[in-house]
Structure formats: C-alpha cells, structure tokens
Amino acid sequence: MAIQTSNGPREGQLYSESPQQEGTCIDAHIHIDLYEAEQRDELLERAFAEGVAAVIAVSMHLESSIVNRDIALRYAGRVHPAYGFHPEQPIPADKELDELFDWIRLRHEAGERFAIGEVGLPYYTRTEAQQAGGNIVFDENPYLQLLDRFAALAAELDRPIVLHAVYEDAGKACDILERHGVRRAHFHWFKGDAEVIRRMAASGYMVSVTPDVAYEAEIQQLVREYPTQLLMVETDGPWPFEGIYAGQQTRPAMAADAAKHIANIKQLPAVQVAEIMLANTRRFYGLL
Image (cartoon, rainbow, N blue to C red):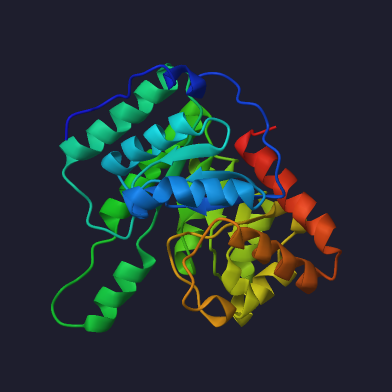
C-alpha cells in the first residue's frame, strides 16, 4: 500500500494544541473506523451531544490509521488518533510494516498529535490455535518482535502506547516496555493475575475498563485491586456487550456507564469517579 497523506484546509488542526472540549467522559479506546462509513458522523455527533468530551480512535493497520487520521482532522480536539497494528491478525510482509512505521514518522515530523496503538500480542489467536491442536505450531516470535519495534518507536517519539496484552501476555509486554523505558502505557480491556496487576500498577501503567464491568466478575475484581488514579473507561466499540447492553449498538457514551460501575465497586460518589476518569485520560493523552 502506498503511503498516503491528507490535504485540505483542516489539515493544520492536528498540528497545534486543540482546545479542551466540555464533557463528562472520554472513551479511551474505540475503533471508529470499524463502524460503517455512513454511521461514523452520526455516532460521533450523538456521542458529543450525550456528554462525551472526546474519543481515542485506535487503528488496526496502515489503512485504518489513514482513515482515523482523516476523521481526527474533521473533529479536531474531539477525536484523538492512535496509529498501529492490531496483533489479532496475521503479520504482513516487512514492506507493508515499513510503510506503516514510515507513515507514523511522517506524522511525528509534521508535529501532529497521536498515540501508538493498538499494538500488542495475539493472546486469543494463539490460544485458539493451541486449542485446535494438530501439527500447527503458533509462532509468537514475530509478534514479540513487532511489539518490541512499536515500544522502541513510542520511546523514541515520546508517545503514549495503547496495548492489547492480556493474561500471561501482559507480563511479556511489561518486559518489552521496561526494556525500552516506556512509561506512558495504556492496557485496554485488561485481564490478568494478581502478580501482573501489582507489577503494572507499580509501573504506573493505565488500565481502561469497558461496560462489561457491569456483569463480569473478573473485571469487577480488577477494579477493586487497581488504583483509581490509574483507571480510564472505554467501549472498544463496535464490539457488542451482553447483560443490560445486549442487542444495543456500542456507542461512546457507554463509557460513562463503566465509570458509574467503577464508582459502585470503589464505594465512591459517581460524580467524583467520573471526574477522576476524565482527568486521568486527559492527563495520560495530554488533552489538558
């Protein structure tokens, strides 16, 4: 895929400091580009009308990154992009990856605002392959090498990094982050054991919680254990949820529901927790 750039009168809006937007929550992790193209504007306009201050739009690959950048240009200060390669898919040829890294560097050299993400390790793909059995051996090494490359880039460019790394993969990700001295790490929709939870908290890594905290005991326990000052809320839309959300299209305002459930678990006032989640996300992504 050839490297593309966007042109037009709005392009400069990603280069300068965007004004802080009013709202009560930020959806810290959403795949805007995975919604149908004709739904995106309506989804975002409704979100902002419902009190969402901003969204962090994570990417799947280069094409996804380009789409998210274009959306961010149209919603300056509201849509903050993250560029990367989602690990739950086959790794492409080196040429395609090089194009992605070169494109990200161009965005940095132009002074644009963005994070690195979504990147990480293929826990679900790997475990499914192992459960399938047979003679196929899943090779995790290319994914470890790619995450190492993204972590090195985040450290070099001093950018936040958004991670898909759950259970035992979280420890591997922590090793890589520590090797490169990455401090601004965001583990989205995280699940893991007590040891890795303590390790991540001690390192000051952020964790974002989805609306499934309403019905998933594992996530509820995570919220009990993780420091409030290191939590954010997200939807991972368009991923659908169960329980009280069954049959509903996932939308950014559902992140505010996650904050309410966190407040119940932490036994803190809902308004206070919403303010903390909002401040945490602004601070981590530099949206002050």
